[in-house]
Length: 632
Image 1 (cartoon, helix red, strand yellow):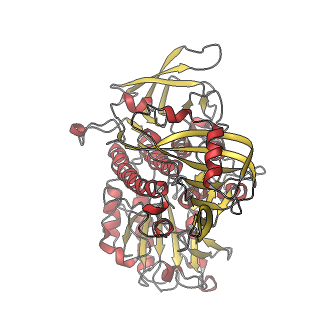
Image 2: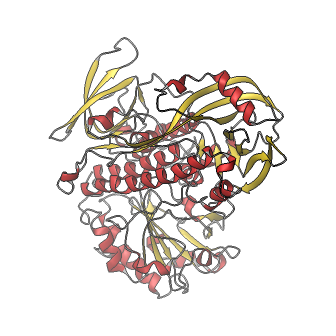
Image 3: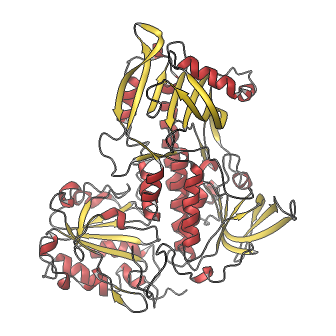
């Protein structure tokens, strides 16, 4: 964590100095804003937390409730989300309070007595070591709390504006073209409407999204005609795996997905309520908690469940629905105008809860649109950047729904319907990378390069998230995860994996460093006048030698930028190979050296040779203003 560069910090270093719009931030919702986010769900708070790092952008997030969420419906946190938490600075704290999934047990009918269930298999949750981060279970409300803390501690001092309900919007002309009608939901002004004008609006207002309706989008898809009762309970039971994630299939029909919760006692059960007749007309949703508990007891026979307290319960029918676009640009308008209104999370994709994907995919929606809005509004990138949001995230949501259809269908099968007795656990293991959040791979675009030089870095596939590995920081000899040093601060990352030459010796690495530092077509040249050299780009070098062989004094200046008002030399961007876990071997990096470009949301954007300065400059040319022309 970098601090003291603006002077001695005696308090909590996570609280950044107020800057820009965070200085004397108005307590009341202003009439004009740059970005208005509707809804404080996972997608909304991640977008807000990212935008809170842009001091020059006025962002407000409104919520119809009168205060914070107390009990959230989502609880599964996949490893990709924990990577995101690391970027926002709270992964270690949330891991400490969460339940950690390490195995999954599969229970099936006893062949000798199908009325009883027996444990048939156990599988590791991440047998392939997809991520160094764990799979967690923690209440959605706590996730939102952590992001709210990030917002409040950011330069913009952002906090949610509670008690406002979205009524409608119109997109017009002018500096603030989106007119949004809100209504007070609490207090003496309850029911009174007011109009907010915004440059952009992000709808994160759930499956019944009014923002989605206002831009003419509809969710299209199908119902699976299968109902599930879900309950978070405190109970006594003789079921031996009550603190282990389980898929339970009974011989008499019916299934349970058991999810232990944080805190040591609470657990969640998704209880199979069976096929819903077409004539049901929603009657299944009136299933009582007593009926759900009774069904659970039938399924886990010969074990019993004595529920002592119900924290929350609900009944839902599996639905798989998706919008055809995630913004307000109609198909016949593509290329003719930029979007002004975006939808995220459940507003544009719904599916079953059993794969634990809703909150996780929604957060990546928010991360994706958040940094892009920040770059456009601060003048770092052209407005055309915003069109990539719908193009990228709609494909991800479609893949999610296709996966969830298969998983939820398998979970609802009766034992006799499986062609292979191990079909369920085989599917769970073989598809582990998808629910963990690591199958996303963005297609080539203005943000993603063509894989012309992919062979130079086979372990960093272009379009996929940057997979961390261990390195040693030279200045203090600390072994660290390289990916963990990238914060959600809106900066691009340029990782220079050096050729074999010593630091500072004539080499392609030294030539690249000189180009980055001095060339007019270097991406660093676009950084606004008066800003730190690393304000827009975080440039790191990783040498092939061990740390004792790297002369930090000989390392080129671009890897040791001067920062803050005192222009202090920052030494923490220089790394060496960890001899016990060589990143060059682990990630298939060419020993001749390679440049890996990573987006602000942690996805690999390009892989290039050290000598490909023209290609590197051309890649960023479409994403940046002219050198030295950026002004606040």
